[in-house]
Image 1 (cartoon, helix red, strand yellow):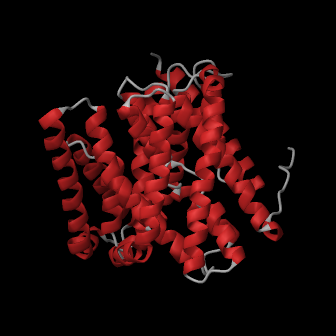
Image 2 (cartoon, one colour):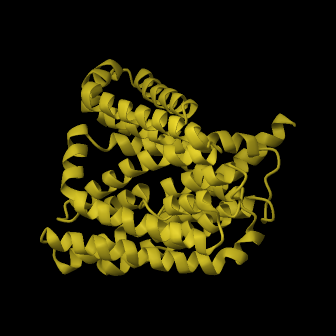
Image 3 (cartoon, one colour):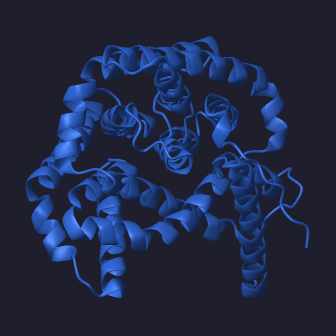
Length: 387
């Protein structure tokens, strides 16, 4: 492998992703679905196949998911986490029952085995925190009455996934009988231990981590996130969950500084993460799953919209706020891709790849457009000026 070829391909991919991000910004939508479309173009069967840079992109994708979940955790304080769980517990129970249940039922309907069906239940469950947070920020909805409640529900979903991902990692690894019970107990115990440590020792960790020397702060936060993520993966806990819990532990001045320093790195590697997922999918496999994926997207869009709207009505949010909240929570993203990757990596459920990619892509494209119709005055699409 020639180093020059790797640099040429990596440079080409990143440059094209820059144009994709610019287009998304002009249209006022999340860049995630466009990154996934770019990945289809770069992969096998695509328009510009990437040959020598795949290994680099794979490593970049692993770092990307760690940074995505680390930054998501940084957005929450431990006390907000506990309060949010109490506030949204009834709706969270309905949410997980409906959306995981629909995914599992769809898996069996598509002739997947029970492990594949469980993975598909994980794909259809959690809303995309990245897309939701980006939309709230870009639309100026942070002060809206429904926003704190929606963020609390996102936290609840993330914690459910913190329990579901170890389960998936264990069963997809092929453990059975007593072995699966032992490994699952270890995984959930480790998750609970890290979460308890984040709640109890978060301030101490943050004081130790914080420094006004920005270079040292950046390296410390990134290194701690990668270290815990790697350790979590070694004991069958998802690296994403480990990174998320580290983010929760960071608070105070360290929280704000970490958020500012890590954001550019997150944007770079997150783009590689979404691109690499689609890079592993042959576009020629999508037509075979297009119908089921679109039907599943329509059903789970409704199964997310109506419970969220109902929950917002219970806390006194008006019709427009309920509509905004329901539409905002429809897209799936980070965790769905992570779960699908677990299934694909197991080697036994390769159909999950194109199905999940098409499903996530459909919701990621439709939801931002639907949200714009909920706030038509804020939508001002702009054409990219020609050079």
